[in-house]
Length: 169
Ligand SMILES: [Cu+2]
Image (cartoon, rainbow, N blue to C red; front, side):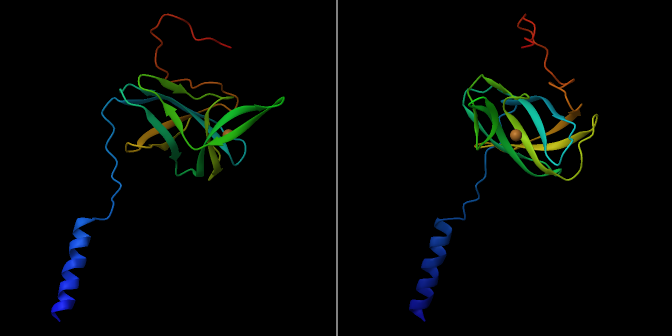
């Protein structure tokens, strides 16, 4: 009896000493990560693509590790690479965003592939997207759906105050 309760005490001590790892990520520092110009193309097939501009205003690097939306079974981060003469989409697990840098997703470049859409994305609508990072809580945003051949979002684009016009090539 005494030995058993001793073992129990020992086990409970272990449990208290090693609480279940709750993998609680710290909240993003307010303003550290800014997601602007979130848009998607109206979809024609069961897959779609969404594009974000993610600015890291903080002084530490961040890693984009994926996204989720109730509208798609799966969201993958894709890049485009040249395979000989053919441009191919390639899945990547993460995209780094250096301190005080930004990444701008665009057709022909980095994009979020929305796989197995529940329904077609209609121009003009908005849908929720949860954007996930490695070391901070995910950020919930809305994505605006633009036309089928759109090359950029029509709204939400931050004004470029650096004095030069956006290059069209
Ligand atoms: Cu893709």
